[in-house]
Image (cartoon, rainbow, N blue to C red):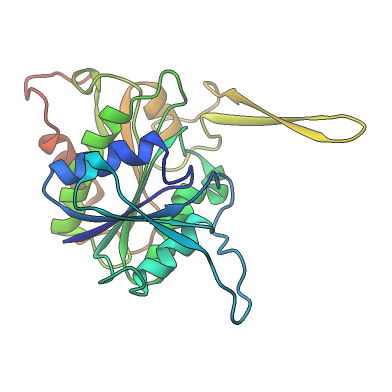
Length: 262
């Protein structure tokens, strides 16, 4: 099982390294292909598509990821996935995992998320994919998200249909304190809110946390309340019921089985 790890925060981002480390410890064969720098909010952009265009890349090595090939590209994550699935960096991956993004990707605005778009790009090329996100610094818990990701990968390998995409959002809690895993529709609003301030020379973007009007049992509401929320964002999800996904992922999480759900 060959897994491509990517993100939209740049190849040196701690969320990507937490994810890659968790997957490597899980025994998976991984390759990293990610943007050289921050590309958040770029959606599914591939960058230039001009004939003969040359996209610079650099091969990287990391001591804590011994034996893992890593490639830094001057391009958005969707392009990195496109190139990897075309076999540019070795055998095409069987699965793409994007993240861990520092900031939740919930609600209908995931359309603009390049973390999610990287996973969707894989799907258009016939490859299953997972997008993984947690909260913003300093409360972010890449460690918990990485452990959840390994369990979701295990489920996807065993049951995920071709082109299936799962969007996974993880609360910023110790793994033992996570209340459970739930399948969830997209909320009308994401946990990340955006507003704008116009000056005479610029439009300034301001972020804020949404906690209200998130709907009932939506992805945003569940993460706010301490659950892992998994949202299928492809028509071809699996040869199993949605509830089976959540049940299997929760059963595989490395924590005491006696933890009660609320």
